[in-house]
Length: 141
Image (cartoon, one colour):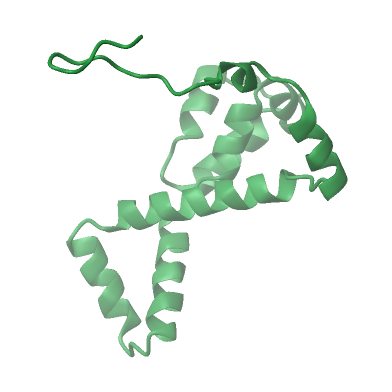
Protein backbone atom coordinates (compact mmCIF):
# COMPACT_ATOMS: atom_id res chain seq x y z
CA UNK A 1 0.00 0.00 0.00
CA UNK A 2 1.52 3.32 -1.02
CA UNK A 3 1.87 6.15 1.43
CA UNK A 4 -0.16 9.30 0.80
CA UNK A 5 2.00 12.40 1.02
CA UNK A 6 1.24 16.08 1.30
CA UNK A 7 2.20 17.53 -2.09
CA UNK A 8 2.86 20.98 -0.61
CA UNK A 9 5.20 19.47 1.98
CA UNK A 10 7.02 17.43 -0.66
CA UNK A 11 7.40 20.49 -2.89
CA UNK A 12 8.61 22.51 0.09
CA UNK A 13 11.17 19.83 0.85
CA UNK A 14 12.67 20.32 -2.63
CA UNK A 15 13.98 23.65 -1.31
CA UNK A 16 15.71 22.06 1.67
CA UNK A 17 19.43 22.75 2.03
CA UNK A 18 19.86 19.07 2.94
CA UNK A 19 20.38 17.01 -0.23
CA UNK A 20 18.98 13.89 1.48
CA UNK A 21 15.70 15.70 2.15
CA UNK A 22 15.53 16.88 -1.47
CA UNK A 23 16.15 13.35 -2.73
CA UNK A 24 13.49 11.93 -0.39
CA UNK A 25 11.05 14.58 -1.65
CA UNK A 26 11.82 13.62 -5.22
CA UNK A 27 11.14 9.97 -4.41
CA UNK A 28 7.83 10.91 -2.81
CA UNK A 29 6.83 12.77 -5.93
CA UNK A 30 6.41 10.35 -8.80
CA UNK A 31 9.48 11.20 -10.88
CA UNK A 32 7.90 10.33 -14.24
CA UNK A 33 4.81 12.38 -13.47
CA UNK A 34 6.80 15.20 -11.91
CA UNK A 35 9.13 15.44 -14.92
CA UNK A 36 6.16 15.46 -17.30
CA UNK A 37 3.87 17.84 -15.37
CA UNK A 38 6.35 20.09 -13.55
CA UNK A 39 9.57 20.33 -15.58
CA UNK A 40 10.66 23.49 -13.71
CA UNK A 41 10.43 21.73 -10.35
CA UNK A 42 12.23 18.68 -11.76
CA UNK A 43 15.04 20.89 -13.03
CA UNK A 44 15.16 22.80 -9.72
CA UNK A 45 15.64 19.65 -7.66
CA UNK A 46 18.33 18.32 -9.96
CA UNK A 47 20.20 21.63 -10.08
CA UNK A 48 20.54 22.02 -6.34
CA UNK A 49 24.07 22.45 -5.10
CA UNK A 50 24.79 21.07 -1.63
CA UNK A 51 27.31 22.32 0.91
CA UNK A 52 29.43 19.28 0.04
CA UNK A 53 29.37 20.30 -3.64
CA UNK A 54 30.60 23.77 -2.69
CA UNK A 55 33.31 22.36 -0.44
CA UNK A 56 34.44 19.91 -3.14
CA UNK A 57 34.70 22.79 -5.60
CA UNK A 58 36.73 24.87 -3.12
CA UNK A 59 39.04 21.91 -2.50
CA UNK A 60 39.59 21.44 -6.24
CA UNK A 61 40.31 25.13 -6.76
CA UNK A 62 42.61 25.30 -3.73
CA UNK A 63 44.54 22.26 -4.94
CA UNK A 64 44.80 23.65 -8.47
CA UNK A 65 46.21 26.92 -7.12
CA UNK A 66 48.76 25.17 -4.92
CA UNK A 67 47.01 25.96 -1.64
CA UNK A 68 47.95 23.34 0.94
CA UNK A 69 45.23 24.14 3.50
CA UNK A 70 42.01 23.60 1.56
CA UNK A 71 40.03 23.07 4.75
CA UNK A 72 41.25 26.44 6.00
CA UNK A 73 40.04 28.05 2.78
CA UNK A 74 36.65 26.37 3.26
CA UNK A 75 36.42 27.68 6.83
CA UNK A 76 37.34 31.17 5.61
CA UNK A 77 34.72 31.07 2.84
CA UNK A 78 32.04 30.08 5.37
CA UNK A 79 33.25 32.62 7.94
CA UNK A 80 32.82 35.42 5.40
CA UNK A 81 29.52 34.14 3.98
CA UNK A 82 30.87 33.59 0.49
CA UNK A 83 29.54 30.05 0.09
CA UNK A 84 26.21 31.26 -1.35
CA UNK A 85 28.00 33.16 -4.10
CA UNK A 86 29.97 30.03 -5.01
CA UNK A 87 26.79 27.93 -4.78
CA UNK A 88 25.04 30.27 -7.23
CA UNK A 89 28.00 30.09 -9.62
CA UNK A 90 27.86 26.29 -9.52
CA UNK A 91 24.09 26.36 -10.17
CA UNK A 92 24.61 28.61 -13.17
CA UNK A 93 27.35 26.32 -14.47
CA UNK A 94 25.03 23.34 -14.17
CA UNK A 95 22.24 25.21 -15.97
CA UNK A 96 24.61 26.30 -18.73
CA UNK A 97 25.96 22.77 -19.07
CA UNK A 98 22.40 21.48 -19.47
CA UNK A 99 21.66 24.20 -22.00
CA UNK A 100 24.77 23.34 -24.00
CA UNK A 101 23.79 19.66 -23.99
CA UNK A 102 20.40 20.58 -25.49
CA UNK A 103 21.82 22.75 -28.28
CA UNK A 104 21.52 21.24 -31.72
CA UNK A 105 24.10 22.61 -34.15
CA UNK A 106 22.95 23.59 -37.61
CA UNK A 107 24.86 23.47 -40.86
CA UNK A 108 26.31 26.66 -42.36
CA UNK A 109 23.92 26.23 -45.29
CA UNK A 110 20.90 26.21 -43.00
CA UNK A 111 22.21 29.28 -41.15
CA UNK A 112 22.64 31.09 -44.46
CA UNK A 113 19.11 30.11 -45.54
CA UNK A 114 17.71 31.44 -42.26
CA UNK A 115 19.51 34.76 -42.80
CA UNK A 116 17.77 35.13 -46.17
CA UNK A 117 14.29 34.80 -44.66
CA UNK A 118 12.24 37.96 -44.27
CA UNK A 119 11.76 39.20 -40.72
CA UNK A 120 10.04 42.34 -39.45
CA UNK A 121 13.35 43.61 -38.09
CA UNK A 122 14.81 43.70 -41.60
CA UNK A 123 11.97 45.94 -42.70
CA UNK A 124 12.60 48.43 -39.88
CA UNK A 125 16.09 49.31 -41.07
CA UNK A 126 15.98 52.92 -42.32
CA UNK A 127 16.63 53.28 -46.04
CA UNK A 128 18.12 56.71 -45.51
CA UNK A 129 19.84 58.34 -42.61
CA UNK A 130 17.41 59.85 -40.12
CA UNK A 131 18.23 63.44 -39.27
CA UNK A 132 17.18 64.87 -35.96
CA UNK A 133 16.42 68.57 -35.86
CA UNK A 134 17.78 70.44 -32.86
CA UNK A 135 17.31 74.11 -31.97
CA UNK A 136 19.85 76.23 -33.77
CA UNK A 137 20.37 73.75 -36.61
CA UNK A 138 19.04 74.10 -40.12
CA UNK A 139 15.59 72.60 -40.57
CA UNK A 140 15.55 69.35 -42.59
CA UNK A 141 14.26 69.69 -46.11
